[in-house]
Image (tube, rainbow, N blue to C red; front, side, top):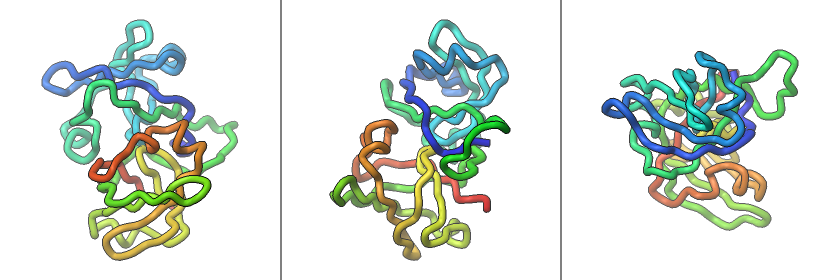
Length: 183
């Protein structure tokens, strides 16, 4: 379980073995993880298979490659990283499992002082699981649905979110990982 509050970002370094292993560089978080421990990577729960210095190696299942954005990343892309929730942790976002429900496409950005409003087109099959003013995780980031229509939803992005996550790098046309609120 995770909270959707991103603690750091890492860099996508490449794939190995026909994209079945993803390599992620992080100065801090990789060193802290033990082999087999979980890490949310752009909202996807992955298990650390190996590490060398500050690069972590994680297996990607066929399901992960087809249902998330992790199977087709550009080298150097910034990734949102969050270690798993501990029982004594302060829950600041919402409960996130790391089991992505699908992807959405960014279709619009609008400046809304002090931040931005993002519009995301989603698969209509997810509609029963989306609630106006409910939570949703975009690339693992806990957000509130500000507006919901049958084909898209909108969320407000505050300046802190734009600078401490990869949501500030997104452009119209980019895909994002979506996880609906489990509560």
